[in-house]
Image (cartoon, rainbow, N blue to C red; front, side, top):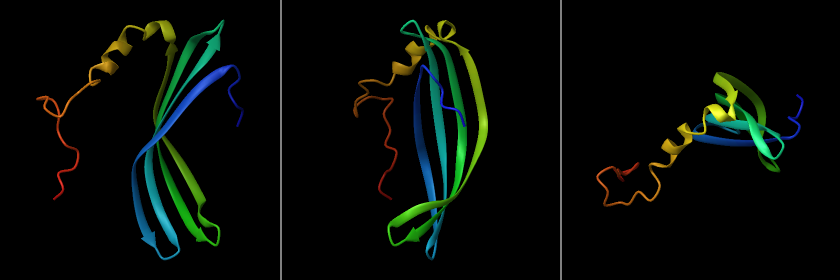
Length: 111
């Protein structure tokens, strides 16, 4: 795998499901990776990847370690940064959302 030169990337993993089986664990998680090619101190191209990790962990004397990994690419897209500059404003609609807002809801209700 070649590392992207002159670029910037961001990666997050979420929604982790774990099933323990003795000293092994089967783990599935979702991942989002976004990267951009930087040219003249500005982002030129944006690449976004959505996928899932199917991992097997093994409990070792040094702690839990990934023993197998399968990555499934569900979707991806690439575009020039100038094509999405106006669309990014919509990402900030949830900022400063308070618990007394009609749009707020608890993720977990304790039941």
